[in-house]
Length: 371
Image 1 (cartoon, rainbow, N blue to C red):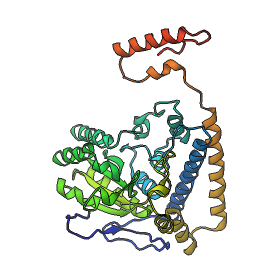
Image 2 (image 1 turned 60 degrees about the horizontal axis):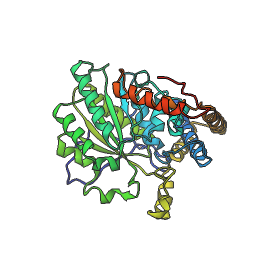
Image 3 (image 1 turned 45 degrees about the horizontal axis):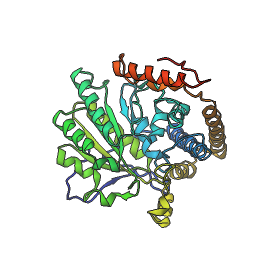
Image 4 (image 1 turned 45 degrees about the vertical axis):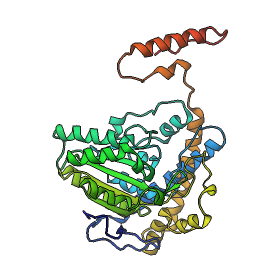
């Protein structure tokens, strides 16, 4: 694990160049087969297709909002595929690729952005917590969970590690820095995975931090590393090493995946108002999918039939996502009171009764739905 100080030049861990050349790294050896790389390529293509379909659905009024992952597929797929069955992930609201790796059906994500569910999946079944809109709070949730894992003795070679996902903007939040401190002093088995897409909505990273984000870890007493966030192989190797480090009782690691948000912050955003088109063009040349395709093609590890089959599958998934999204049932009005607390709550019960009475005051509007 690469340790750092605030005065060193940033070292970018990269295993696969934008030109598709496999270089390797002495600290992060990756034993991976051609079949596994083809599988990663398939993941990248399919999650991008799901994402583009979701953007279209929002534009057509089927979703209230969507936070696109465009450009960040490698950071999410690489880290997501590094997770073990017993590991637990705490996402923000953009980790659609990690959700894919944890077996969350895309329609479950769309249901939340359509406003018909509160999340829709069982976090324990998938090892993937519900999305968190509050910026940075999930870093504390992950740290607390990791401390619980530690106290349960559920660490070791076959134990549990925890990972928290957040963006560069969250590193300016107090919650995230408190999580860093708690994790460090408690030696918690947690990996902080920061997708530095270089824009916190319209605020650039350089206006948020005087040092590279990964170097902040040194101030809290644990290692930090910067990885090429558009390199799925590097993200896989670095995250796997950090998770193993956590399981073995060596405490937290901050992984800064240096990437770029090629789309808007959300569908409510217009990035052309605050960043130059030349910047976007520069990062398009580092496209995370294109470099894997180049590697497979240049080394004769995949043929035209393979790429065509993935494209066909992607189109089918896009159509499936559209159909399933439109078929999601609207909730009953009183469903808003569901799953607020795990146990009955007097205040919630009172509010539900008042709202039911209010609904019943309108002719033709039922108050059915219950708890």
